[in-house]
Length: 195
Ligand code: MG
Image 1 (cartoon, rainbow, N blue to C red):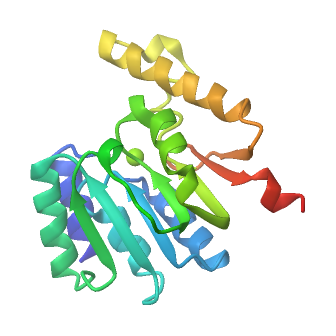
Image 2 (cartoon, rainbow, N blue to C red; image 1 turned 90 degrees about the vertical axis):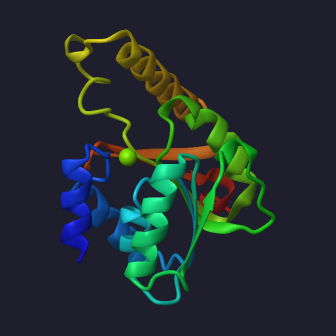
């Protein structure tokens, strides 16, 4: 059951997408008829499984560098019988190379590498495809500096701010921000919009 994954994540303090965020993402996939997805950061496989459940023709490649999370995600994907739709890889996405193109690239991994992931995988984006990034609010810390308590948090918040600046100044892509879950961005190639 999907509820069990949510409970497991909560009890083990593993960040998964908030309910309104994952629901928005699944509707977006349905509405835009997205079939091929690359996910950076599987965590326990929750979002990959939810996305796969949108339609049986959807194929997902998801990358997780942490071996423990990979193992949990691998087993969850199997137990949902989603392994015919989801391929999970245990590697650091910064070292991954794909020749395929994807309709959606979903970035939800190490927040300090968002720019690297965006630049690295934008060449794997199908024509008309989207790059979506999660956690741009970082639990409110990006908007409210007074919530930042540790040096580690400050570093991450600064990286996320830099990423937002990067998106805003990226002329090749048009980016919208949506306030669902922990705030997401949706980037689309300008060429695909204005042709
Ligand atoms: Mg996330």
